[in-house]
Picture 1 (cartoon, one colour):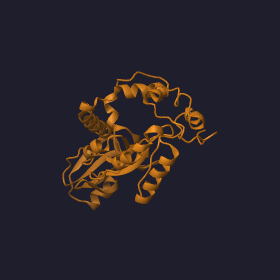
Picture 2 (tube, rainbow, N blue to C red):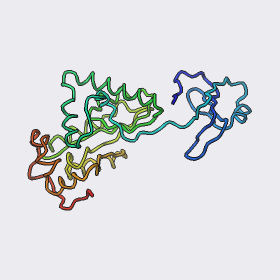
Picture 3 (cartoon, rainbow, N blue to C red):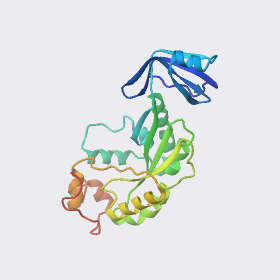
Picture 4 (cartoon, one colour):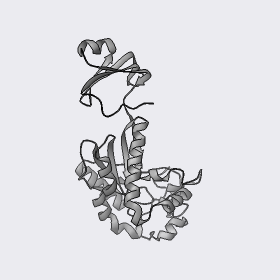
Length: 263
């Protein structure tokens, strides 16, 4: 797979064996007209040559031109974990491995920025031009992504459960950081998961998103173990989880949902 270079001339026709404009619609011997970094027209080569006479041409033989791919759920800042966590393994065990690999505070800024840049570059290499990125470090990742070339909806991740429910406002404020918003970057909110954001906090996050017209993303119904946690606060994601034991955050004020919403 090839991705167009970003240093294109002011205007040209890019030609390929075929052009996919939408699913199941393919035009043979077609191309696109690019003017000042923007797509000005698409269609059969003869039609483009007639409409835009004199434009230089670039031929990608044995290629299909198609719109950039969309990855709706990424964690670009975790790109540094490549080959560091063996698998397969149960989800709770994988999370423990993830936590163990997180950078030390003194190194976090460099590691997270570098990983985010690396992840974005990998997206471009594989034809992904738009992502929904979940980030726990919006103050670090958003400035990196603001300049493109990938278009990003940056979902600030929020956790607020049990003895850490008091951190909700601080995490919400961080998730709403918007100074890097621009042509390539917009923001959203991501209450993390049913086992890390309790009901009242989730209601607050949703209300803020609605009031500001921001998109929402959540890790929801990833595994059946969420249901046991919501019903009893126990199980592999609850009190018996070594991570929950170490963090000591579950208290009796966490709402329960017997037979809850996870199926």
